[in-house]
Amino acid sequence: MKAIKGLLYLSGLLFVASVVFVFLSWGALNTFMSWFGPVTFPDDPLVQYTVRNFFLVMFWFGALIILAVHEPGRHGKVLLLLGGTCLSAAVLCLVLGLTHGLPPFFYWDVISAAVIGALLLVYRAKTAAPA
Image 1 (cartoon, helix red, strand yellow):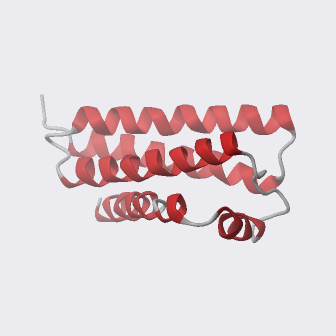
Image 2 (tube, helix red, strand yellow):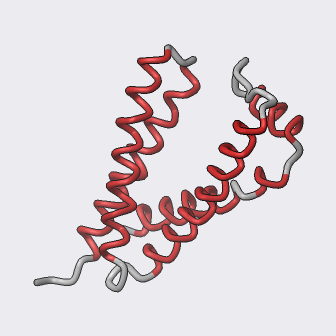
């Protein structure tokens, strides 16, 4: 159980750390992305708006993970919703990846979302108060 809790804290902290990308210049963000493959973000205002908002949402998603893992008895429904969000995101990422023929790097989103979602749901089940 400690291992699951530790992995969820780590995941939450990584999500929280993504807020750094909100403040990076667009060139620095694309340089970082190019380390993982040839696909980078186009220099378009709508794309920049969307990507930066996504990173801000991921920051708060991580904060919720940390809060819910810290007090699972009090935030069991939050764990359920976060787990469901991750698992549905895994399915959507898979469908979008296959539909648009994205490079293999993007399938790590499928794997990480599925693993984090499953861990959140297992953690919730293991920490739920007996009925």
